[in-house]
Structure formats: C-alpha cells, structure tokens
Image (cartoon, rainbow, N blue to C red; front, top):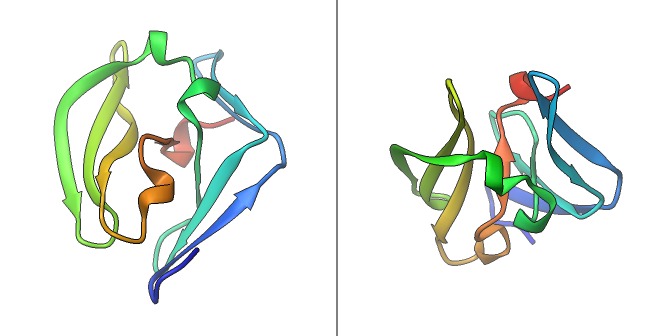
Length: 106
C-alpha cells in the first residue's frame, strides 16, 4: 500500500508503547507508515491498545495525505496518541488505528 509520499508496511514484530510505566499498547500486528520527511510510525489496532485508559482530547487536525485526526490523552499527558477516523482515499488501512508519539514509547 502506498502513494507517492507515503508507504505502509505490515509489521509482525512485537511493538510496545509505555507511558510512565503503564503499558498502553502491545501488538504483533502494526502497520508501519513511512512518510517523506517524518519518522516511521507504527499504527496499532485498537484491540491492542488500552483504550480504557485514554480519553479523546479536544485537538483535531487534518492532513491532506492521510485525513482527519482525533487525538487522545492519558491523564495529564495530553495528545500522546492520535487516530485517523476519516482517512483520505488510499489510506483506508489506517482507519481507526492508533499511533503514538515516539517520545512516549519505551
């Protein structure tokens, strides 16, 4: 899956995300998104994320290459994760998946 700017690569390697010692995501079924000019990001299926610990924030953005984004917070740690709820054509594979900033991962 790809366009001129973005490529998606299925990843079966175990990837985990921890914040303040709390395991928030643990998966062997991520999609690695590579976008020119940005670090690679792992998109987790929601069933592999502790969604019960996250709250939807008021932040929303729009990327012309990926779509409309919702952000999620963990307590006082604001906007640590996001999800494309309405991806653009060609990016449907990331719909609803969760992605975290690399500085919250351990």
